[in-house]
Length: 248
View 1: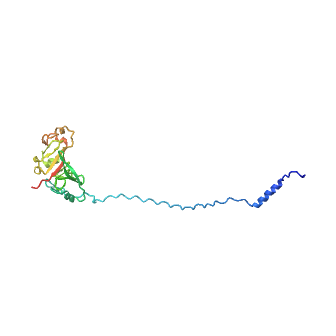
View 2 (view 1 turned 90 degrees about the vertical axis):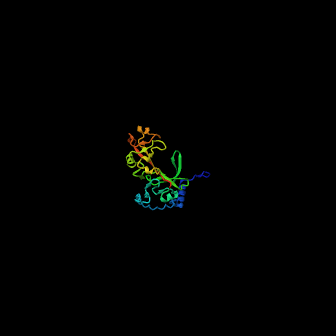
View 3 (view 1 turned 30 degrees about the vertical axis):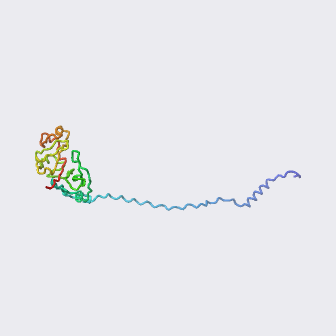
Protein backbone atom coordinates (compact mmCIF):
# COMPACT_ATOMS: atom_id res chain seq x y z
CA UNK A 1 0.00 0.00 0.00
CA UNK A 2 1.40 3.39 -0.89
CA UNK A 3 1.86 6.22 1.56
CA UNK A 4 -1.16 8.46 1.90
CA UNK A 5 -3.54 5.78 0.84
CA UNK A 6 -6.63 5.34 3.20
CA UNK A 7 -6.30 2.40 5.59
CA UNK A 8 -9.31 0.03 5.31
CA UNK A 9 -9.83 -2.44 8.21
CA UNK A 10 -9.66 -6.02 7.17
CA UNK A 11 -12.50 -8.42 7.90
CA UNK A 12 -10.22 -10.83 9.72
CA UNK A 13 -9.41 -8.20 12.34
CA UNK A 14 -13.13 -7.71 13.23
CA UNK A 15 -13.72 -11.44 13.57
CA UNK A 16 -10.71 -11.89 15.82
CA UNK A 17 -11.78 -9.09 18.12
CA UNK A 18 -15.32 -10.52 18.43
CA UNK A 19 -14.07 -13.98 19.35
CA UNK A 20 -11.67 -12.51 21.91
CA UNK A 21 -14.40 -10.52 23.63
CA UNK A 22 -16.75 -13.50 23.68
CA UNK A 23 -14.16 -15.66 25.35
CA UNK A 24 -13.49 -13.09 28.06
CA UNK A 25 -17.14 -12.58 28.88
CA UNK A 26 -17.80 -16.26 29.62
CA UNK A 27 -21.18 -17.93 29.24
CA UNK A 28 -24.17 -15.59 28.93
CA UNK A 29 -26.65 -15.09 31.79
CA UNK A 30 -29.33 -17.76 32.20
CA UNK A 31 -32.90 -16.90 33.18
CA UNK A 32 -33.12 -16.89 36.97
CA UNK A 33 -35.81 -18.96 38.66
CA UNK A 34 -38.82 -17.09 39.91
CA UNK A 35 -37.88 -15.97 43.40
CA UNK A 36 -41.57 -15.79 44.52
CA UNK A 37 -42.15 -18.80 46.76
CA UNK A 38 -44.84 -21.21 45.61
CA UNK A 39 -48.00 -21.03 47.69
CA UNK A 40 -48.24 -23.63 50.39
CA UNK A 41 -50.59 -26.53 49.59
CA UNK A 42 -53.84 -26.22 51.60
CA UNK A 43 -55.10 -29.38 53.27
CA UNK A 44 -58.12 -30.99 51.66
CA UNK A 45 -61.22 -30.16 53.77
CA UNK A 46 -62.95 -33.17 55.34
CA UNK A 47 -66.18 -34.37 53.79
CA UNK A 48 -69.25 -32.83 55.50
CA UNK A 49 -71.05 -35.00 58.02
CA UNK A 50 -74.58 -36.09 57.20
CA UNK A 51 -77.16 -33.60 58.45
CA UNK A 52 -78.95 -34.58 61.63
CA UNK A 53 -82.56 -35.65 61.03
CA UNK A 54 -85.23 -33.05 61.90
CA UNK A 55 -86.86 -33.66 65.27
CA UNK A 56 -90.25 -35.32 65.23
CA UNK A 57 -93.18 -32.97 65.99
CA UNK A 58 -94.25 -33.19 69.60
CA UNK A 59 -97.88 -34.13 70.19
CA UNK A 60 -99.28 -32.66 73.41
CA UNK A 61 -100.05 -35.30 75.97
CA UNK A 62 -103.71 -35.85 76.77
CA UNK A 63 -105.06 -34.22 79.90
CA UNK A 64 -102.54 -31.40 79.62
CA UNK A 65 -102.87 -28.09 81.40
CA UNK A 66 -104.63 -26.73 78.30
CA UNK A 67 -107.61 -29.01 78.93
CA UNK A 68 -110.75 -26.98 79.63
CA UNK A 69 -111.49 -26.83 83.36
CA UNK A 70 -114.23 -28.99 84.86
CA UNK A 71 -116.99 -26.78 86.28
CA UNK A 72 -120.45 -27.10 87.79
CA UNK A 73 -123.01 -26.89 84.96
CA UNK A 74 -126.12 -26.68 87.15
CA UNK A 75 -128.68 -23.95 86.37
CA UNK A 76 -131.09 -22.84 89.08
CA UNK A 77 -133.33 -20.12 87.58
CA UNK A 78 -133.32 -16.98 89.68
CA UNK A 79 -130.45 -18.15 91.90
CA UNK A 80 -127.33 -19.39 90.17
CA UNK A 81 -125.70 -20.34 86.90
CA UNK A 82 -123.03 -22.96 87.47
CA UNK A 83 -120.60 -21.47 90.01
CA UNK A 84 -121.93 -17.93 89.47
CA UNK A 85 -124.50 -16.82 92.05
CA UNK A 86 -126.63 -13.73 92.39
CA UNK A 87 -124.84 -10.76 93.92
CA UNK A 88 -121.31 -12.01 93.18
CA UNK A 89 -118.70 -9.40 92.24
CA UNK A 90 -116.38 -9.56 89.26
CA UNK A 91 -113.50 -10.46 91.57
CA UNK A 92 -115.48 -13.32 93.12
CA UNK A 93 -116.36 -14.67 89.68
CA UNK A 94 -112.73 -14.42 88.56
CA UNK A 95 -111.74 -16.47 91.61
CA UNK A 96 -114.00 -19.28 90.34
CA UNK A 97 -112.01 -19.40 87.08
CA UNK A 98 -108.36 -18.77 88.05
CA UNK A 99 -107.02 -20.10 84.75
CA UNK A 100 -109.26 -17.84 82.61
CA UNK A 101 -108.94 -14.13 81.83
CA UNK A 102 -112.35 -12.47 82.03
CA UNK A 103 -113.26 -9.83 79.43
CA UNK A 104 -115.24 -6.69 80.33
CA UNK A 105 -117.88 -5.65 77.78
CA UNK A 106 -121.07 -3.60 77.44
CA UNK A 107 -124.03 -5.94 77.08
CA UNK A 108 -126.99 -5.09 74.84
CA UNK A 109 -130.22 -5.79 76.74
CA UNK A 110 -132.68 -4.70 74.05
CA UNK A 111 -134.39 -1.52 72.93
CA UNK A 112 -131.02 0.25 72.58
CA UNK A 113 -129.95 -0.18 76.22
CA UNK A 114 -126.71 -1.67 77.50
CA UNK A 115 -125.43 -2.87 80.87
CA UNK A 116 -121.93 -3.62 82.15
CA UNK A 117 -120.93 -7.24 81.74
CA UNK A 118 -118.04 -9.65 81.75
CA UNK A 119 -117.42 -12.59 79.41
CA UNK A 120 -116.25 -15.88 80.93
CA UNK A 121 -114.47 -17.29 77.84
CA UNK A 122 -114.47 -21.02 78.41
CA UNK A 123 -114.59 -23.17 75.27
CA UNK A 124 -117.14 -21.94 72.73
CA UNK A 125 -119.89 -24.32 73.84
CA UNK A 126 -119.62 -23.37 77.53
CA UNK A 127 -118.82 -19.66 77.51
CA UNK A 128 -121.28 -17.13 78.93
CA UNK A 129 -121.61 -13.46 79.90
CA UNK A 130 -122.50 -12.12 83.34
CA UNK A 131 -124.55 -8.91 83.74
CA UNK A 132 -123.98 -6.42 86.56
CA UNK A 133 -126.05 -3.71 88.19
CA UNK A 134 -123.37 -0.99 87.86
CA UNK A 135 -120.08 -0.11 86.18
CA UNK A 136 -118.28 -1.17 89.36
CA UNK A 137 -119.35 -4.76 88.55
CA UNK A 138 -119.94 -5.50 92.21
CA UNK A 139 -123.23 -7.40 91.99
CA UNK A 140 -124.18 -9.93 89.30
CA UNK A 141 -127.78 -9.70 88.14
CA UNK A 142 -127.92 -12.47 85.56
CA UNK A 143 -126.30 -14.45 82.73
CA UNK A 144 -126.79 -14.31 78.95
CA UNK A 145 -124.98 -15.22 75.69
CA UNK A 146 -125.02 -18.78 76.97
CA UNK A 147 -123.21 -21.51 75.00
CA UNK A 148 -124.99 -24.60 73.72
CA UNK A 149 -123.43 -26.97 76.27
CA UNK A 150 -125.56 -25.45 79.06
CA UNK A 151 -128.94 -27.12 79.46
CA UNK A 152 -131.94 -26.81 81.73
CA UNK A 153 -134.61 -29.52 81.97
CA UNK A 154 -133.17 -31.27 78.92
CA UNK A 155 -132.92 -28.33 76.50
CA UNK A 156 -130.32 -25.76 75.55
CA UNK A 157 -129.36 -23.50 72.67
CA UNK A 158 -129.96 -25.44 69.44
CA UNK A 159 -132.62 -27.82 70.81
CA UNK A 160 -135.29 -28.60 68.20
CA UNK A 161 -139.08 -28.41 68.44
CA UNK A 162 -139.50 -32.03 69.59
CA UNK A 163 -137.09 -31.49 72.51
CA UNK A 164 -138.86 -28.24 73.42
CA UNK A 165 -142.24 -29.98 73.46
CA UNK A 166 -140.88 -32.69 75.77
CA UNK A 167 -139.60 -30.07 78.22
CA UNK A 168 -142.07 -27.18 77.95
CA UNK A 169 -145.16 -29.23 77.16
CA UNK A 170 -147.20 -29.30 73.98
CA UNK A 171 -148.19 -26.78 72.91
CA UNK A 172 -146.24 -23.80 74.22
CA UNK A 173 -146.63 -20.23 73.03
CA UNK A 174 -144.15 -17.66 71.74
CA UNK A 175 -144.16 -14.13 70.33
CA UNK A 176 -143.71 -13.13 66.68
CA UNK A 177 -140.33 -12.89 64.94
CA UNK A 178 -138.01 -10.03 63.97
CA UNK A 179 -138.41 -7.50 66.78
CA UNK A 180 -136.98 -6.93 70.26
CA UNK A 181 -138.92 -9.83 71.80
CA UNK A 182 -138.58 -12.08 68.76
CA UNK A 183 -139.56 -15.66 69.55
CA UNK A 184 -139.89 -15.05 73.30
CA UNK A 185 -141.42 -18.14 74.90
CA UNK A 186 -144.39 -17.38 77.16
CA UNK A 187 -143.57 -19.48 80.25
CA UNK A 188 -146.79 -18.98 82.28
CA UNK A 189 -148.70 -21.22 79.86
CA UNK A 190 -145.94 -23.86 79.77
CA UNK A 191 -144.56 -26.53 82.09
CA UNK A 192 -141.93 -23.98 83.15
CA UNK A 193 -144.47 -21.63 84.73
CA UNK A 194 -142.78 -21.79 88.13
CA UNK A 195 -139.55 -20.42 86.63
CA UNK A 196 -141.15 -17.29 85.21
CA UNK A 197 -138.87 -14.32 85.94
CA UNK A 198 -135.84 -16.53 86.61
CA UNK A 199 -135.14 -17.76 83.08
CA UNK A 200 -135.95 -16.52 79.56
CA UNK A 201 -135.75 -18.53 76.36
CA UNK A 202 -136.40 -17.59 72.73
CA UNK A 203 -137.03 -19.66 69.64
CA UNK A 204 -136.11 -18.84 66.04
CA UNK A 205 -136.76 -20.26 62.57
CA UNK A 206 -134.05 -22.02 60.59
CA UNK A 207 -136.11 -21.70 57.38
CA UNK A 208 -137.08 -18.07 56.98
CA UNK A 209 -137.81 -18.47 53.30
CA UNK A 210 -141.07 -20.36 53.88
CA UNK A 211 -144.24 -18.24 53.48
CA UNK A 212 -145.41 -18.86 57.06
CA UNK A 213 -142.39 -17.04 58.50
CA UNK A 214 -143.47 -13.76 56.92
CA UNK A 215 -146.91 -14.15 58.43
CA UNK A 216 -145.45 -14.47 61.94
CA UNK A 217 -143.23 -11.36 61.97
CA UNK A 218 -143.79 -8.61 64.53
CA UNK A 219 -145.60 -7.99 67.81
CA UNK A 220 -148.98 -9.37 66.78
CA UNK A 221 -150.08 -12.25 68.97
CA UNK A 222 -148.79 -15.29 70.80
CA UNK A 223 -148.13 -18.13 68.38
CA UNK A 224 -148.85 -21.77 69.23
CA UNK A 225 -146.05 -24.28 68.74
CA UNK A 226 -148.57 -26.64 67.15
CA UNK A 227 -149.97 -24.10 64.67
CA UNK A 228 -150.55 -25.52 61.21
CA UNK A 229 -147.35 -25.51 59.15
CA UNK A 230 -145.12 -24.63 62.10
CA UNK A 231 -142.94 -27.68 61.44
CA UNK A 232 -141.80 -26.13 58.15
CA UNK A 233 -139.98 -23.34 60.03
CA UNK A 234 -137.35 -25.53 61.66
CA UNK A 235 -137.98 -24.02 65.11
CA UNK A 236 -135.14 -24.30 67.62
CA UNK A 237 -134.12 -22.71 70.91
CA UNK A 238 -131.96 -19.73 69.92
CA UNK A 239 -131.14 -17.96 73.20
CA UNK A 240 -131.29 -18.63 76.92
CA UNK A 241 -130.91 -16.08 79.73
CA UNK A 242 -130.92 -16.48 83.49
CA UNK A 243 -132.00 -13.66 85.80
CA UNK A 244 -130.97 -13.57 89.46
CA UNK A 245 -133.93 -12.57 91.57
CA UNK A 246 -133.37 -10.16 94.45
CA UNK A 247 -133.49 -11.80 97.89
CA UNK A 248 -136.90 -11.48 99.52
